[in-house]
Length: 158
Image 1 (cartoon, rainbow, N blue to C red):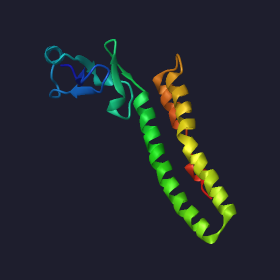
Image 2 (image 1 turned 30 degrees about the horizontal axis):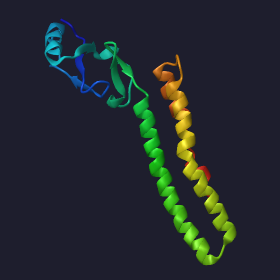
Image 3 (image 1 turned 135 degrees about the horizontal axis):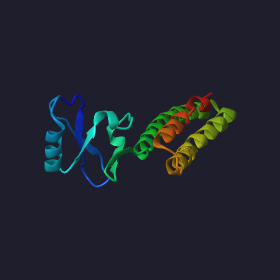
Image 4 (image 1 turned 90 degrees about the vertical axis):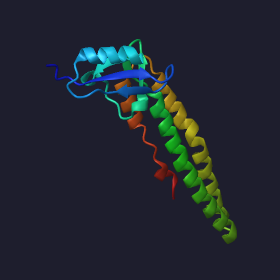
């Protein structure tokens, strides 16, 4: 009896997220093959799937399951924008207080920090794009490079 666990994988749309279908544990490989043919998918042993943290990162490429690093880059950028927008709102409040107090030095520093925050998505986006576009780098290396790209928003605070 085959003890491997298989999964049927198919694309929901061309190049889009994958859909996973599992049958009962212990189902023979032949049954998976029949079901995959019905669904228009492929059968993959779960042990042969690449390591991934989010199923939306997986794509089918030439009949193989591969990790696409672009969705992770988008998640990083979206998270960065959320944090940046929160910081900008905080700085807006500080600038109002500085105006009320007539503290022009503090207002100048706040403006510089806000400018840095506004430039941050472009700077990070360029770094992420270099990682995504890196030729001949494995996806695991690209994911590690993305993890190293720590955004130190705290450095932009007082």
